[in-house]
Length: 147
Image 1 (cartoon, helix red, strand yellow):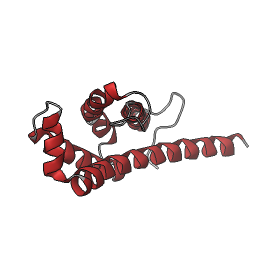
Image 2 (image 1 turned 60 degrees about the vertical axis):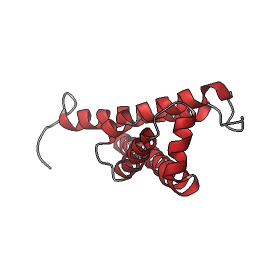
Image 3 (image 1 turned 180 degrees about the horizontal axis):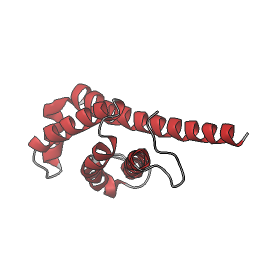
Image 4 (image 1 turned 45 degrees about the vertical axis):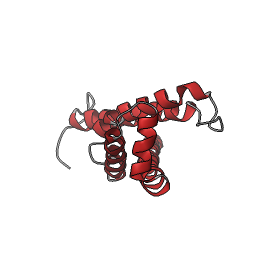
């Protein structure tokens, strides 16, 4: 019974980590492609960046980072590093929305969503690095042999 419980816990933990990673990847991909490319257009997004005092060229970098990062997260490639690497994008979004208030319905959008995504990105990175460390170093007392 104990081994069944342990197996269910491991599956649940793995499934939860995968679900969170996929949700984050979808968010990045849709935020770049749907919002920046299809809704506002890259030129419109660059114009918005310029209107808030950022270089317009940065919009293209952010678009590419979100799109590529989203695809990498969905493909489960370099998950920890991708999640950490996208934190500056979310930090910028938090800065942009910081004066708008807490709620997403605030004029210009609130800052709670970028903050939440920062937390999710950190959790996804921690999960990825924890899994890698566990795979590399078997627990004390466990047999370390090829399966």
